[in-house]
Image 1 (spheres, rainbow, N blue to C red):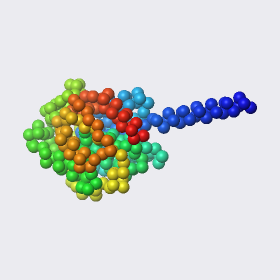
Image 2: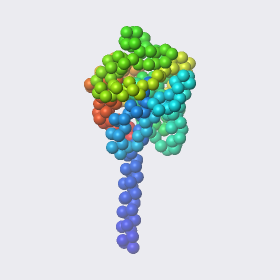
Image 3: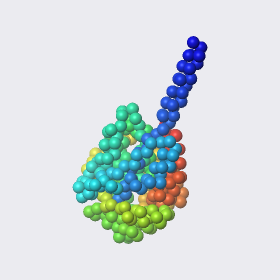
Image 4: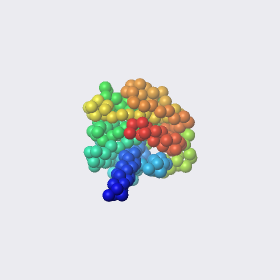
Length: 272
């Protein structure tokens, strides 16, 4: 009888450890920026998985290997549909860590507004971060007003976004390996800012979007969304945590994936 009692206690301890380990594992959902796809997380995804976490990298509509054409996507919500579908499919008791890069911040905001109880923290990686006082298009419109035609280096913005090779080299990936520059050019797809649609959408709510913990990762050498503009968005709608990355361009997921992964793990540790 004594041995049975010891066995029972050991069994409880083992189950407790297993449950504790499972609870420590996080589900990261990685959301790419405009004209990219799930492929752009190819360096970060295995680093997070090597730390024992589950990672989902999504292709948004008309991006990556998604077969739809951008000409068939008229709203940001349609564009964000793959993330909305994923969030809908999650059990009510499961929470994920959302990570959005660049334009992906708008997609994060849409998901946060709809599913605040399914998100433990949202991380904005040198990305657009809207507020709840203004239209969802506000941060994009203000950003556009800071850019001159020369700044875009021949990129197309209307009717669809196509970044030029010069813009990619000097404004997007000036600190990233040349191999990633070539990969970006080979896999690029046209995108859209959906400005007209976003300007007509109702403001994101404090009850939804505003209730989810937010962290912002500043890329100090970003030549696309400048550090100054990133700081403006942070001041405009302060997140719970701000982390700085030195020596990173607009795609820290290319130029410093290990450091970015370390920051993501530290953020999760803080908010889990």
